[in-house]
Each structure stands twice: as structure tokens, then as C-alpha cells.
Length: 67
Image 1: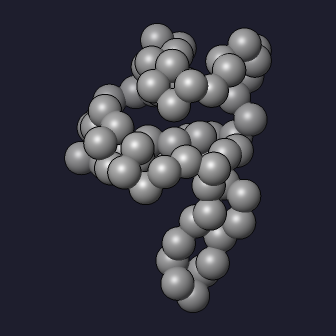
Image 2: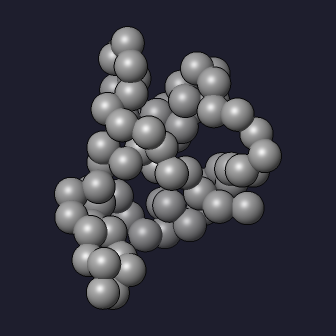
């Protein structure tokens, strides 16, 4: 299982190093609730994700698909 973040939170991506710059702590992402890729991301799951990271979830539609 993997941790999930909103791709809209990615500030920069280095394809050669395969790493993303985000305004989150690595440990915060590592200990985040795990996401099972067999599950659908619904509005409740999205709200839990935004609550965990302390991000506002008042948008009608996410900034971008999540990964």
C-alpha cells in the first residue's frame, strides 16, 4: 500500500531523480494513512486525506487527479 497526496500539492518534479518537491514533511507522508489502490477515492476518502494533511477541502473539484 502507498500514501496518497493530491498532485496539485506537488511544486516540482525531478524525473531523473524520481522525486517530487511538496510542502509536506517526508515523515508526515510516510506515516500517513495508507491507500489501497483497489479502493476508489470518494469524497469521504478525499476529506480524510485533506484533514490528515491539514489542507482545505472546500473545493468542488480537486485541483488535479490524486496519485
